[in-house]
Structure formats: structure tokens, C-alpha cells
Length: 153
Image (tube, rainbow, N blue to C red; front, side):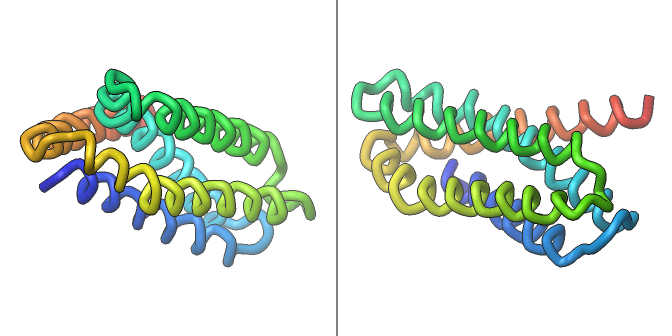
């Protein structure tokens, strides 16, 4: 598996969760559950992706600007998650804010897959693509386990 295949797995999950979240209405368990799952997925994905994809690419001059842009988008997504978390799920403002989050996530994933992956594909060796995938998957799994144990405590 390459880093691109590993990242796409999480990207597909994010797209699915965001779409399902937008189909909810009112202060329901489904809405809370889907938002919580998406929030966690975004957090663990961003952590592992920044450490094992963006930072290695920032070591290469052509990767600096795109990496910075992608990290800035992660920050914007984090801010939308915080705003949504602070909004009552039954509020009329919840769904428009959720739509804004879903749109930002979808935009980020599309841009990453269409622009960033192509550039990274030229900069990284095949061995690096495989090594980074393993590092990403390990970090992602550890972050998910850490979240699960924190939630259980």
C-alpha cells in the first residue's frame, strides 16, 4: 500500500460520514453519533497525515507551500468542528454550519487528491510512499486507540 491509498481510505470514510451527518435532523442520537464519529475521524486523520505526509514533504522545497496550505485547511476544519460542537444540535443554525464543515472537508479532500497527491507522487520515491503509508497507518491506529481509551475513561 502507498501513502496515497492509505489516505484515500480515511478520505472515503470522511465523505461518507459528512454526507450521512447532513441527512440528520433535530437533536437525535444519529446526529450526535455521526458528528462525534466524523470529528474523531478528522482529528486522527489530520494528526497522522501531518506527521507522516505533510512534514516529510515540507523537507522538500516544492512541497513546502502545498503542505502549509493543507495544514491551514486542517486548522480551518478544526475551527468549524469547534463551532459545530458549541452549537445545540436542535438549533436552526446547526445544519448550515454542518454543511459548511462538510463542504470544507470535501473541498480539502478533492484538492489534496487532485493537486497534492500528483505533486507528492513526483517528489517521493516508491520506497518512501510505502514507508510513509506504514507510518501513517500505525499513527492513525494509535490515535484511534487513544481516543477510544480516553472515551472509555
